[in-house]
Length: 275
Image (cartoon, rainbow, N blue to C red; front, side, top):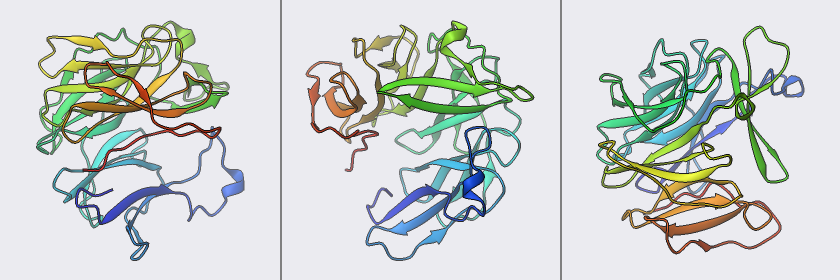
């Protein structure tokens, strides 16, 4: 949802000509669309053969960062809120995903294989000044020349990639490597929250923006994922399968007071705060 609460950007394959041929190895062509929160004014923002996904609004609502495969690899792109001036910010990086805006709108944090393993990087909103953040993650053995997919099996997650020219899926966890994903800035820009499987399953972590400290916030045998900061930075919402299926939880920003918010047999996931 846009910062002013009037518009929603979403991903859809509604214009895919041959949806029955889509598969994990050959995914559908997805594009970005925008609609007013009253359901009026549907607009298609992107139109190219690549896959567009993961749109995130700038804090002022004037720009949208997103992921695209239009240049033969996953890259972080930027466009104006009306879809104009679409620009590749990460260009020749091997693999770049999951952009997240810093609260002031001047910087973006993202995940990349630039140095041969999944690591976090930060850059200015125009793509300049790309700098690696030391999240303490060991290098992964995944290749940026493959497709990354999330698979959910009875509440447990696997992260798979299909190497270019390969004939089978490979599992990043089975390679002995760790992964940190879904970075998100705290409202004051002092910390980055993310989930990681560095200790065997997905947990929520935060690291200081100045790299001075890394803290694990959740600690159980379940998968705790997709952190979302409250607007005032005092709490973090996330989803977890710790009680048998995926539900929404909230905790204080230091990891205390973890509380279940939803309780039903369906999967409740991917929380997002509204100011």
